Amino acid sequence: MTPVLVLTNHKGGVGKSTSATNIAFGLVNLLRSARSKNAKVLLVDTDSQGHATLVTTGRKNYDTHDSLYATLVADRKEAPRILTQSIHPSTWDPDLHVLPASPILETAERELIGLAGAPYRLADPLSKIRPHYAAIVIDTRPSFSLMTEMALLAATHAIIPVEPRYLETIGLMSALTKIQDIREGWRHPELKVNGILVTKMDKRIKGHRQLLDDLYQHPTLGKLVCGVIPANEAVSYSHHRNMSLFSYDHRAAASKAYAQLVTHLARQLLTKQV
Ligand SMILES: Nc1ncnc2c1ncn2[C@@H]1O[C@H](COP(=O)(O)OP(=O)(O)O)[C@@H](O)[C@H]1O
Ligand SMILES: [Mg+2]
Image (cartoon, rainbow, N blue to C red; front, top):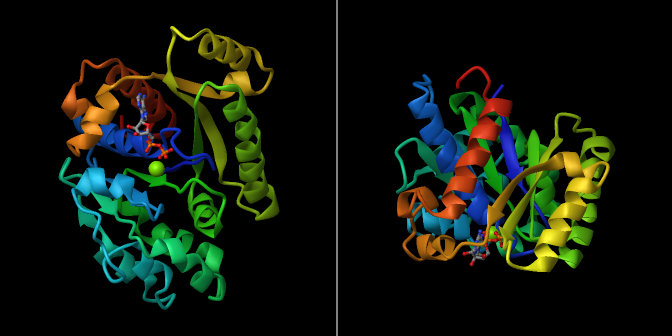
């Protein structure tokens, strides 16, 4: 079954969108070089700020009728068709498709809470189109709002990006608790914590090194670390140009680290295709 990977953490600026977009693009490339029959990957942007949408499509002016919002408010029987119609090609690769966010998602939650089956309004229609894709990657907003709950209920694997700073790792525990709540409290056993992704790691900073050591030595969290992405200015340069990190500079330290992560994820999640 197609894996649905969600990047989540209620903290902003930890690299969720950077990771979601580059993992999605990295998977397309890896599937293609493995001559997989299906190299299509769908990126779903559930954050009203639309950063993932902007960098992968060059646009952020999606509206009520051609973005994720249209699916969320649709008549339930119509929702899969509307979702399919709202998917756009990315500018990064023909096999990378995008279900874009739009600014209206910011206020949509209030409206959505009143609708029948609100928390499942992403999971249900997405499950219908899931077989068309080799993988689906969901970017989330920096909060545990209804929108993020919808994303978690649609997902099978969660990655929590975290910066190597003390207070950030405290936040990590609430992210793990939230995922456990969704799995057990909301009865979505399919959702697993796939890993903790340490981002913006600067080895020159003693506190960063210390925190990474502590994380590795932690009895449960240590085993969950799935990658370490170095702090690298190539990341912001790639964003300014609306490019993937790999296309901007595949030799940059962060590109290499993301490539390693993508290989690890593909081995874990796409065993039949690669
Ligand atoms: N590895 C990295 N090195 C340097 N800057 C980074 C790195 N990852 C992300 N950034 C920068 O940090 C900011 C937040 O990243 P972003 O992916 O948008 O986080 P989030 O989606 O969690 O809010 C952006 O300006 C981005 O360019
Ligand atoms: Mg973001």
